[in-house]
Image (cartoon, rainbow, N blue to C red; front, side):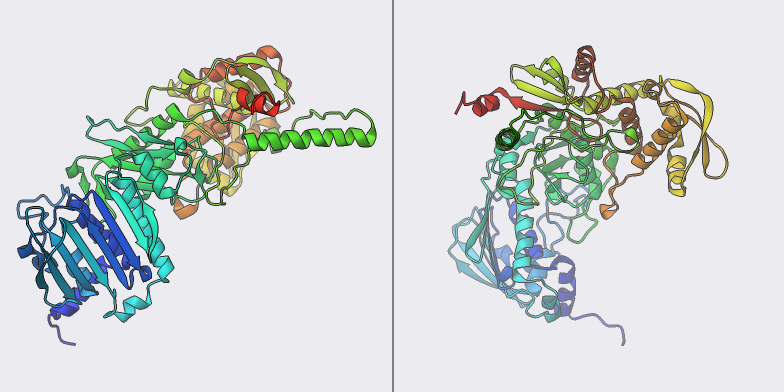
Length: 622
């Protein structure tokens, strides 16, 4: 075919494909226009998943009558001009493509009244036709109605999902926009049913509760950005007991713009490191503010991706903001009253039934749970309370974990858990696994292995940071055979082993010669051939763990996992009998830790049984 210029109508439909993929794309563009117009309230209505009708109404400053038709011309915009810096763009929309692209594939009616006008105007554009403008009565603001989307592009219509699926995308999108702009009241109606209604009260935590239907508002806390800093992060986050199996509850905005960034989502996960069990993800709204010239938003037709000049700094700001808030607000995990009552009742009924049947006093087996393989206590947490009325996706994992510190360009808040952790009085040891302590709040059960592991982890890390790691020479060098996978892992992290106090040399083939181990491992008698081999192989296996979802990294970095596994080997184990003095020493050292409420692998170190719960169980309180 010969080269020729496309007709305007065809060129408009082709260009529309870059901006308008589906009904959610239309809604996004119209909402961004409303926000740029200074709207404080935005109402959205959908019919047929957006195929039949999309209506977006705002109370912004409106459009002048003589500019209404011009708004539907390609590249017509009020947001940039010849003097504008196309990198430092403060508005959400700026290309001037949204309205003409939408009008090229639908029947659009816009009614608007400018804040300085006494009357409004109505403009209709059907599938790229010439705009028709009429005078109309209207309140200040703009109303846009989009009908029969993609009717003139059957191929595009064919690739849309079902009306319910398209509506679900719109719900998700508007929820994210409502989170980013908690100062704006959003209302969404789908086929006559109200699906979303946010307060618009400037409270990010309230917006988070409204959008994600969080019934217990107390699990949400606002982040308070340092407004004097050029780079800061605000928003709101959920406490770790509210977590999910996917990352779908993490929303990121940069300078008020919704963005998709795996790197920034990973920064949120790093902030939660140590708080959450493996492969559980938080609920978070992160609103990053940076100098406009540091962010390039003009890298994607739909403006969902951005490019940073100093991405590492933005990463640190997010990680530290999340970590500092959790370190301040995350409480000690409590027993669930429902589960407590159930377990007590079951245990007592079972004991009395046994006595009735045998007429003898039942014995209590106080033996600890069997330690994990290789002699390492790798059991999961005990006493997992039930969380009633939660579906599978919204299951509350009842762990509150503080994160581990990271060496980043910005220090986290100086607030430590030790500043708010109560001073505990040790009562003794239970089942050779738990240290029992109390304070005015109630009774604490402390997992002796997890608690000591946290103590040892911070001790090892402090020594490594001070370059004071100590080693213990073995009486005779030990040879350890490695699988090909373990060889790769060791080669990648050999320097980390050296910094931690290991003396390991290649010994030909797939073998290593271990000459010395860190002193902290020698204290636990991991110095014989069997102990050295088990410890080294376990560490190599642990540090090789990654989060395979979307090729994403594990939130615990290589060096941290190495130290955490060493701490696991150095700590006392479930089943070890401890004298009262040893229990008191572990509790004292735990209270001095920066993050005493979890072991470095994310399990809780302690559980609280409140005095109120005990009083209810014994009938002292209703």
